[in-house]
Length: 231
Ligand code: AMP
Image 1 (cartoon, rainbow, N blue to C red):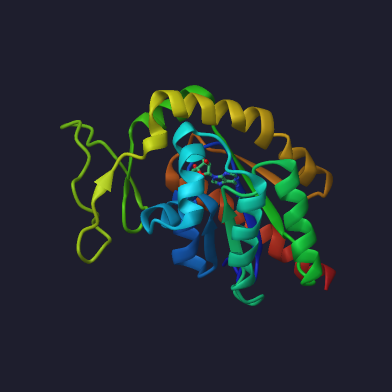
Image 2: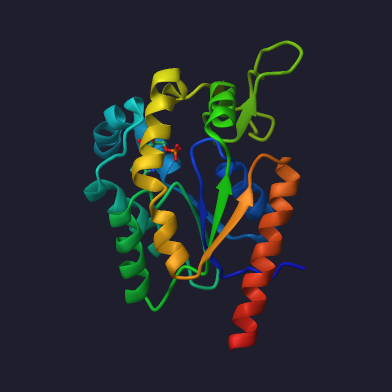
């Protein structure tokens, strides 16, 4: 039985690895908060805030939004979550400066990341998944085209008023290529930062959603058991 309340987790992996899907499952099962930097930016975009306008161009091109904006936004959000509840970060940190800023901000609060779960998927599979990805405008739940009709659902099954399903502007072929190249150049090196701290666990991401979910739960169980035996 996974006992993970209060855990501070980073879900790490390239765009399309399934971090958002896994975060949703973990949230339903364990009640820990899901903090997705991409969702926070999309929320600002749809509310037309200054921060959203600033981020728009970078997002549409598939580039990273500058650290001065991103780090403050995510650290503020984490600061609203109680220590007892815990959180999982999805899409952050995405470069070395973000990883260091996160570590410093948590240390100042007497906290630390407990585990980094790295979901590994090859580029070919990521391109296939992202070009077939649609999401709900209201709750961000991901959908794919129907295997038989080739059409995505029009409305979200989870949202009370049936949120609109749409394809993200940055899931175009050009933006996807850019995002993958930035992932390899700037984001993947952050794995070494966490490996050195003994926090990294790798999971093959080209399995069923359920198999990945159970692999994540096993990792959280082991992390929890290690914490209990230390205390
Ligand atoms: P995602 O939903 O995680 O794929 O993020 C969508 C877009 O938001 C990215 O392509 C970036 O433009 C921006 N973004 C999200 N997270 C970050 C981050 N940690 N650093 C910089 N930009 C980010």
